[in-house]
Image (cartoon, rainbow, N blue to C red; front, side, top):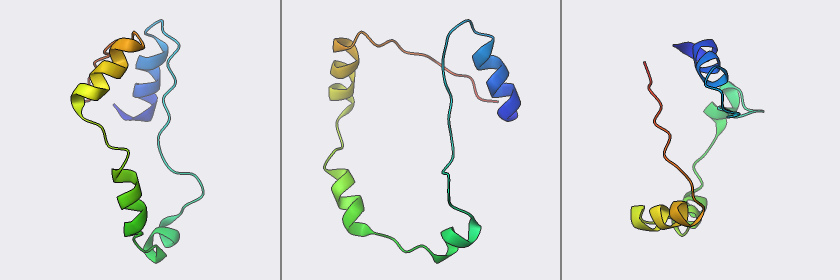
Length: 71
């Protein structure tokens, strides 16, 4: 499908959905020089929620499921 195909499917659906992927400001050399920050990963783990908690949040916000086909 590629990026152009994904964009076409998003924009032709009649909804106003925005799709964004990637990381700005990093190139291959930056990634090669990077080092893991395990303390930051531990911090992120504190924000983890269960599927039931996520469902409750979605229900309270009246969010709906949107299935996306990937080719």
